[in-house]
Length: 95
Image 1 (cartoon, rainbow, N blue to C red):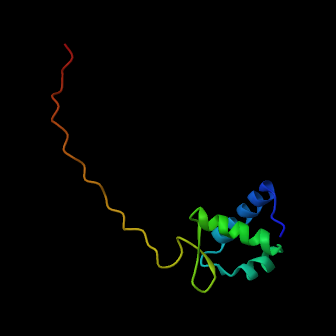
Image 2 (image 1 turned 180 degrees about the vertical axis):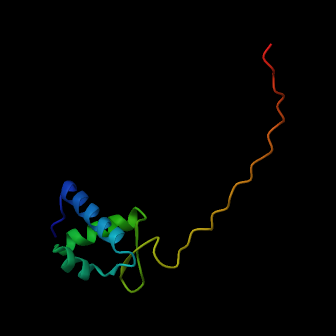
Image 3 (image 1 turned 90 degrees about the horizontal axis):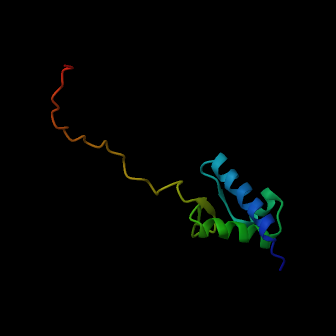
């Protein structure tokens, strides 16, 4: 089993991350990813698993790799912060 060197792996990870960012909702199995990116199985799986370990992707029960932020996981709604009243200031007149 040939595993890519660290520099090649970093390039593959950036490429795959870019594909997922450009195509929201992308769902690929490792086999589909290999065909799409023209990779050997070990290189593709190592890159995908690295993206899973970093929290960018997750692997579904069906074996598809999906973005962690796509789909059912939602962030809580943002709320405006309330400003506290500032103490009253007395103005000084120039003498």
